Image 1 (cartoon, protein in one colour):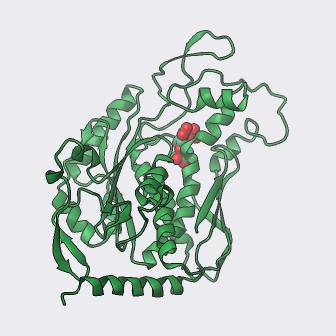
Image 2 (cartoon, helix red, strand yellow):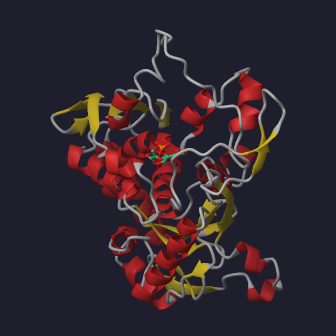
Image 3 (cartoon, helix red, strand yellow):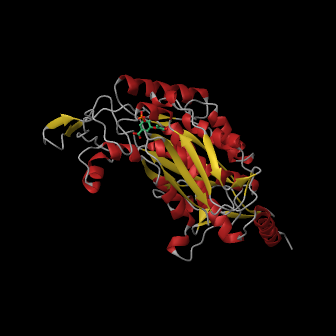
Length: 398
Ligand code: EPS
């Protein structure tokens, strides 16, 4: 099974990641990894930091002649901003210069609980690792898993459907049309927008909402629509809680900084309707599987992929660092204070949607590997093909 870990502080020398369990034989290119990193960096509403960084990954192990070799892949992304933090973030030598401790926690951030839990007098170490800068390492690591899935015909893509109260009125017809070509086609269309929204008018409304928030020293969250196409029926299982694919997907999305809600299909709308208006009726189909006129289940029934497009939604809360700060207090003096201001983004929802694509890739890849096994890509693909043929035979009219 694929596992990955990341390390690195936001203003430390570098971020790193180790990805382990990838089958051998997956084609890896620096362009592919860096393209995913660039997608994560784009987006209207980012702060000054994104002007400093141009994230590029260096592959240190696990790849030979452009292909994975089954051993752990390690990656490193340099933090260009490190040069401005060598004193404040020095690993070993405590500088002579006085570095004022940050002692006023930001509401909604890891600051307060983090410093109590780890016993810090200064919030700085919490800020550094709780920062969503860490997601650059996740995106680099998971780009390898996305490449694996791509060669198995499985694609992941996303777009942003709302930023603050600017809700997109995307036509579901257009979304369907794009998804028919694969979720990455949809993602490419979203990439063309600075807020990863479909439709110029939606984009303009979102940009205006971000501008207004910035002027007011405020921040905005939003909603991400994530799609996975090409997954065969039967990934995941209903037989035990820890084999449930919907739970694993939700867990992966919730693990992203500031993501506080996940929806599978139209789950919340479904909860308000009777079953007759919710469940996706089955009709005899083709050898690709049964036909359904709706996909309110979001491609997951019984915690397994049912052959329909997987549709997940993630809710990102507004970033906790506000330029017009909220009420807080100084943990040293216990005096009331406005909260700490730190350079930050006004809105990072477009970046979050790219991260959402990344973190769901290992979940799907592991479900696939549980079904097929295989240490080399060719082995996985052969077994997947045989399974797809079996499915097709089951749905053939006698
Ligand atoms: C972040 C604060 C900002 C963001 C950062 C996440 O960084 P800085 O404190 O250096 O201005 O830009 O995001 C990234 C650096 C990134 O690469 O996504 C935070 O506190 O979470």
